[in-house]
Length: 424
Length: 158
Image 1 (cartoon, one colour):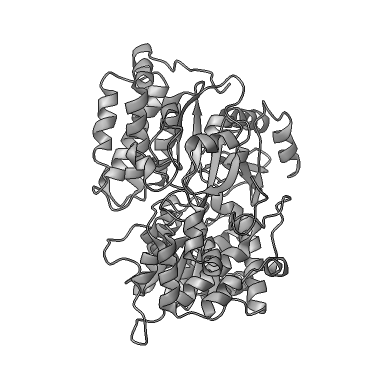
Image 2 (spheres, chains in turn orange, cyan; image 1 turned 120 degrees about the horizontal axis):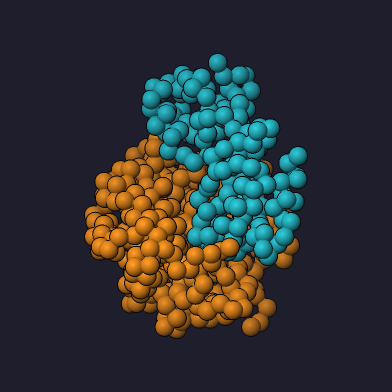
């Protein structure tokens, strides 16, 4: 591989090895804010057309085409005012740690993406909705916003940092809008979509951090270049990550469509004495893949063909020594705790499933529990709940039962965890 | 009553939003920073300032993991129990913390120095297992792979 540069690794090529952030001068020295300069030469509709043509799709997990999202906002003198941008920096999906890297080490890249989006949709105000636990990101973003404001680098948009107080639901598109309004972050009915009626009923773009960080380079180098970065029809590069018991956990910017196996190789493979048993390809809410799936391309369509999703692109590796029932109990416990309580199948069903799994892990599972879990998961959609939290819990549960049913049966039959002491 | 310092901090956030209510979370965090936790009295003070009912503000407050409605120790240790940490030494880290501090999750040490609380994935999965003390993230804390690391972290908060 050649040295990473702007044309091959637009998101990460300027990051410093020591992790210190680029200040405004350093960012400008590597052509920072040139994407915004290019955008300023274009009509808003041309910016949207360019982002559409790039095939940039949302990097928060759902993969909605970004240009399409921007294009639904009403434009022109008669459009409702003000219009808003809500930046989804509420990275809370277990196993996901990619947005932290971008915000801690290159905050101006995000600000430039916001400024370009603001010009494209004629938004006056942007809120960066940052999870409360990302304190270093908060410090560095505040500093970058102050620098950019002092240099009048962002054009006409006012950017404010909103730090949350810790709740996974706030990362859900419409839950975030309620949270920004100072309410409980319950999801809202769609339609109307935020692009028509979002914050305080005004047109609002909700975009993930990594998504917006892709925008400046698209404006500088064009949609065709961006397309060509990718190995598949989904444009661009992707920040992929690996965590779990591998030799070198970490993050890498790679062409969209890099395979599961290639990403795992970059992580140095499994730690000594461990074998790969499965992996969650893109965070806690994605269905498990097995060692048979190493050649699956990580994009927005290939993992679907084998029953999963790319999600956030940060893989959680499951080894042969860890107890899979324990892992599933951990995942469902998370979703159960973080359910906002708006829909019954979610708040009630997840709590029940969590208790069943904890009992199973403690050797108190009963015959029929696996069927009960499958039955509960059948109420979690998609389409049965307001938002994607419960369907996101159903995916790992259902898929782990499908691929590793024996583990669940062993727990019940032996009245104990066969892997007991695996984490001693 | 909100102190002048609390008032001015909250007021500077109000300027960012078209409606005062939007600063509910900021206001609760600001009061917690000054007073250690959100007491009933603090809840009343903030509700009055925001012109919300106490119940409505309580509904916002109870939604969030980081807003504390009970007194805590001088430092709060938030232990990540996300799946990546669970796989890489969370159990060992918890046992180490509990034996060193002599408390279980949800409890405060007798000298009032530390409160131990769980927290969802802290988004540092490539350095699992991790925890936060107050606002500081500490990484790579598996007692097996990194002996003495936990003790080293606790020492920083003497």
